[in-house]
Amino acid sequence: MDIISVDHLSHFDERPEHAHIDFGTRVDRSRLFSWLEERKPSLKAIVHIGACTDTTQMDERYLTKMNFDYSTLIWLYASQNSIPLVYASSAATYGAGEWGYDDNEDLIPKLKPLNPYGWSKQRFDLWALDQEKKGVHPPTWSGFKFFNVYGFGERHKQDMASVVLKAYDQILKSGSVRLFKSHKEGIADGDQKRDFVYVEDVVNVLQFALERPIERGIYNLGTGKARSFLDLVRAVFRAIDQEESIHFMDTPLALRNQYQYFTEAIMEQLGSQGYTKPFASLEEGVLQYVQALRRKS
Image 1 (cartoon, rainbow, N blue to C red):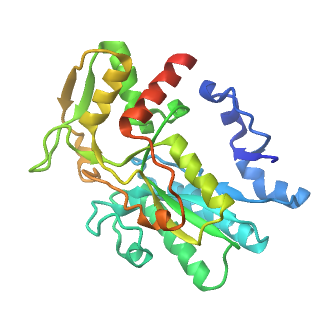
Image 2 (cartoon, rainbow, N blue to C red):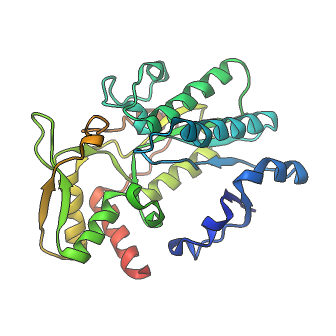
């Protein structure tokens, strides 16, 4: 299958971890639609996972441009040209979890994200559902609320890279890891929990969604099992075969009101579509990731 990869062209060459990847035809994202118009290719599907994923980004106009406006253009192009679409939403839409982590679409309008990034993803989910009601939608489509994805190839994300990579780098540099203290009564330091999902599992689900294809809708994409940050960094220490050393620091004031203390995907909806492949445990995924980092460093 021919691949068309879309991003800033410089990104394809400036990220050493991606040097071995065959990106197929490379198209700058600013020229995508004119490029498509010139060639009128017979696209089999669109996988739209590009976005500004900076949860500390406060410029709502920038997030609207990157995470909403561009996504609407992708949706409309897929709709007008009858092209199946898979896109990335985010577990950040769930906010503090007041309504739980159920991907029931009736709950989506009630969700209250904690930061502008989450709101940008929420806004597009709601827009997509509204477009569908108006009869403007791709022939098949599915959105996925990515939970905490980790895996090889994310170093370019810098501060937004996973805690697995940050822990790995800290251990190699200093022999210890720093984690945020808990500022919530009843939750111990390091016991903040996330649904950490290995990137290979994410790819498997997206491929399944396209090949089946699954029923239209917005789905959770996590393991369905929350694990603590202590669990995560201990798995990194074991993977490196180094003695555990963990220190706690105050969560920066600017982040405290936006900090999620718990996320856990309810995965029944995806299971109902026939996806039965087991997800890697945190320990399995971390071990594979660390091995990849060591091989390719």
